Amino acid sequence: MPLADFEEWVTPSLELRAGGRTYTVRPPSVEAGQQLIASAIRGEINLGMIPGVTKVPDEVQRVLDTITPGQHPALGDVYEQMRADGLDKVTIDRAAYYAVFYWTRGKAHADDLARQLWTPRATDVEFDDVDDAHPKD
Image 1 (cartoon, rainbow, N blue to C red):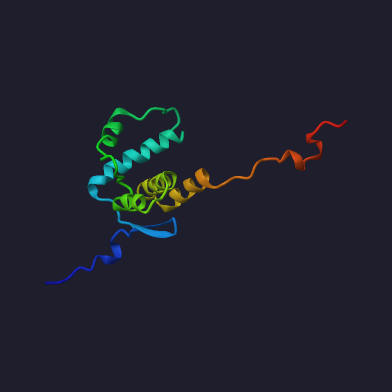
Image 2 (image 1 turned 180 degrees about the vertical axis):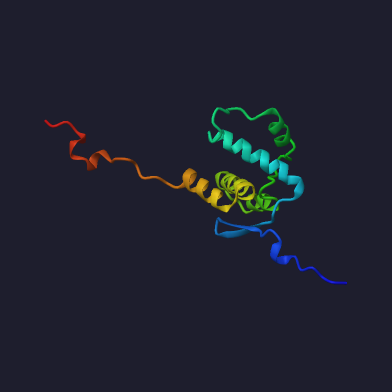
């Protein structure tokens, strides 16, 4: 019987580095697909990326309500691994947010969004560094 080697076309895992460890997130299951799309829609609404939409539609919320508490469809088993490793909530939330957009919109979009959301920004002006910032006596 001929063998069709499908390995080169299999969706690769996502590797996330956090807390000094590398986590390997397997591609989401078919069942998690709807939950991921709903999560991406909610994220886009919360970020103001969908003009005129400020509330998650009921049909999207119904899908979100199927997510089991304590789990995340974008991270799979890695969600619990991160918690067990003692990573803080913000880091885990950011990893989950990144993974949602990675799986639904692609790496470039997830990378751009992560840079926009979490890259530290310098303050616009340090008043002590500006001569005219204080009135002259």
